[in-house]
Structure formats: structure tokens, C-alpha cells
Image (cartoon, rainbow, N blue to C red; front, side, top):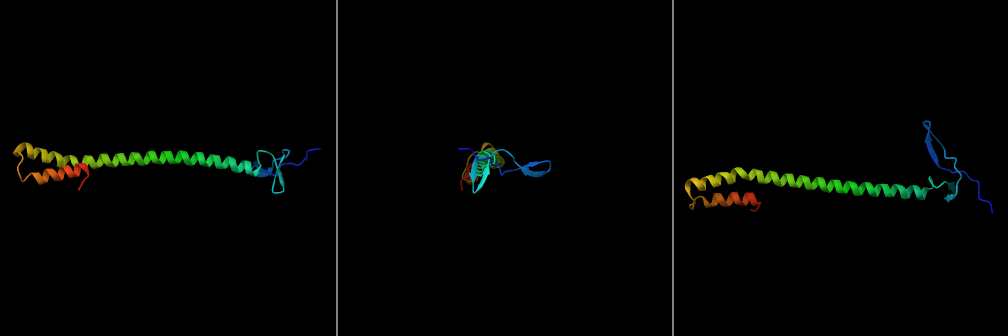
Length: 116
């Protein structure tokens, strides 16, 4: 049996316009014949694989970016607590701990640990 001598129905971009592929077609899809390069299920599978790879890379980069932002926010939160802690420690050092300083020390520690 002779193989059909059909030509690929795929279109390629060349010289600023579309032209027929021209390769001999061996794959049929929806009544048209295509070469392996332009066979619609093959094209779809390749595009899907590229998209999945891109999405995976994007999700990894996005997760890393979010982790960096969370770490920076935590570092800033802790840095904002330092003046209060330093003031509380200075008061404790200068005056010694008494009943009036306990709330200030507790508030500074709560702010530093992030607890109410």
C-alpha cells in the first residue's frame, strides 16, 4: 500500500507572512494531515509541558520571594522592639527593679516576642 502524498496543513511564519509548511504529512487530525512538528496534539502537548515547567519555576520563585518578605518583616518587627527593650534595661540597670518597672519590662518583652 502506498502512503498518501499529502502535504502538511500547518502554517509557518516566514518573510513577514504565513506560508504552508510543505513537509509530507503522516499524521491526520480532524480531516487534515500534518507533519509531526505541526500535528495539533503534539503542539498541544509541547505547549502544556512548557507551561507546566514555567508555572513550577514561577511558584518556586514566588515562594522564595514571599519567604524573603516574611523574613524581612520579622527582622523589622524585632528591630522596632530594640529601643523599648534598651530603655527598659537602662531603667532596670539605673534604678533597680521595683514594682513600678515591672509593667514596662513586661510590655517590652511582649512587644519583642510578638505576644499581647
